[in-house]
Amino acid sequence: QVQLVESGGGLVQAGDSLRLSCRASGLTFGSYAMGWFRQAPGKEREFVASISWSGGNTVHADSVKGRFTVSRDNAKNTVYLQMNSLQPEDTDVYYCAAPLSRFIATMKADYKYWGQGTQVTVSS
Image 1 (cartoon, rainbow, N blue to C red):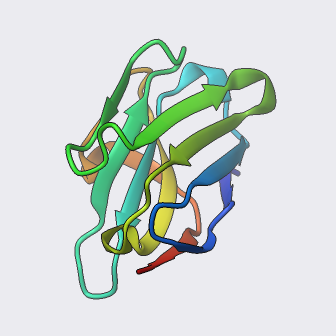
Image 2 (cartoon, rainbow, N blue to C red):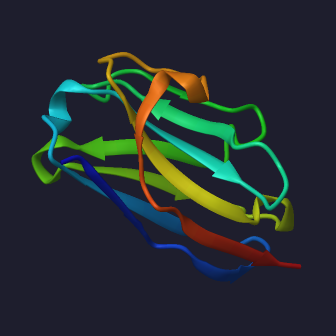
């Protein structure tokens, strides 16, 4: 049974930083790419970042490029999202997800497994 468990969300002020973590179990973590998405109430879940199986390739959405960085530690079965210079528009529930692919993926439909999400709230 695949489980993805996010942590690290919270309430911060604009300009602050947070690091989200997502620990995976039930899959050969080092064989698969991973991704982060976010969703606000009433809106579509949107792509944030993806990292390949080795960590050698990453892609970030234009809206977070230069502020957010995805990384992974295969020895710990964990993927991270470092979020700097947070803004109120970054307020969302953040989800990690696993596609059944070694390579980065940006489309929600490419992802098979999802975590339960962690709330990030940025006050102005």
